[in-house]
Image (cartoon, rainbow, N blue to C red; front, top):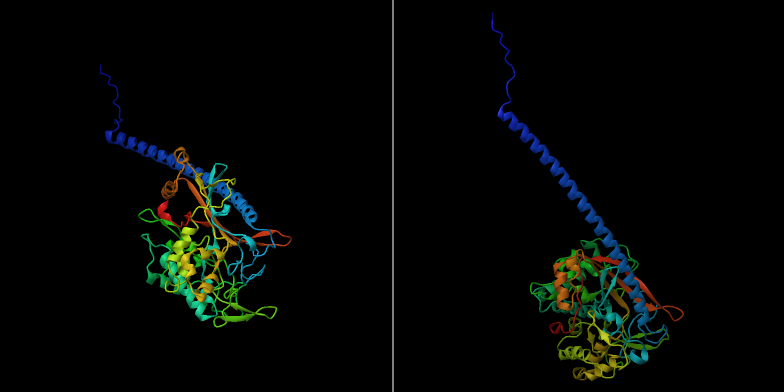
Length: 474
């Protein structure tokens, strides 16, 4: 018999390298799936965070809007009764009507008898902090009368225009003194020259000239800037000149917009202010509506001595005409404790809730007589200086900074001093939004005060710092 043999299997066992390839392919597919899921998770989380930030920014904008409405009411309450002689806001902006051409008292008028006085002792003059719907708000208001108006450089009177140009050079040279971002005198002159040329010859400027109501028919070359930041496109300016920040030593560096303005006048050649004590042998004379002749002098756009920073004050008159110690004495005067204050008045608190003593203010230009260097001025210098000064303000820049913490650690870090505040802002933790509005306060009909927005809403990329008289003491 033949032995029966079982048939051999014709299949071959899988090779080890094939099993490894299948495993590797499986791992690759697994990694791809994990990457896809991870990417979807990241994208979804990012979209959620973006959506939360958008909602947060919208909430912050609403909080800023609420704070702005409160500021409007505060400025109205601070204004004197409309129709009061010389009251703040009773005048109009030059070139815009709405009252006298000059919005401030001249030659010592105003004060307690003539109307209101605007100073940093007013409610608007103190930085304020509040909270709305867990949004921390800081409100800082600068009166534009504390700054020097660039449009003085466009005056028809070449002598006055040149004086204004030199004042702008001096302000730019002094505004950042003592910081690592100091502007040297040669650069300051280049900047002032560039500003003047930009306004005088707009057809040759890199920035096209917009159509404006203030345009003079037949004069296509000159034009008013839409704002100070318009000069950022002109050499030698750059973005850093138009924002506040801390230098490498931690010192506040202020925007040039804290010292210069274009908002206190809306015409290229405003009328000159009048003085009460004309000198028959000097100055110009103009006829008023009644046909009488009145003496005029000065640049036509005044500066509030209760709020103007030292850089602006020192630039008003050259050192050979006015003793520089006058400006130091002026700053010291308005930082002395008020001796005749009301003992029953509510205490003055700073933005951190610390009680401050009530400081003195100039109720009128007559009080300059209490400063010895002022009494040593000649009649001509005194009249020229007084024509540039006032104690009232009518245009205000309102800065509202909203901050929203994005974590428990940030929420627990509340600043208790100016230095801590600056350090926290430098770190940039949480969401932050800063907006600016420029408001014009003037008298309306029926003894009311109206607030007219010159700039309704502008989002800034920085939070401003307060310009202090004596920053080293803080």
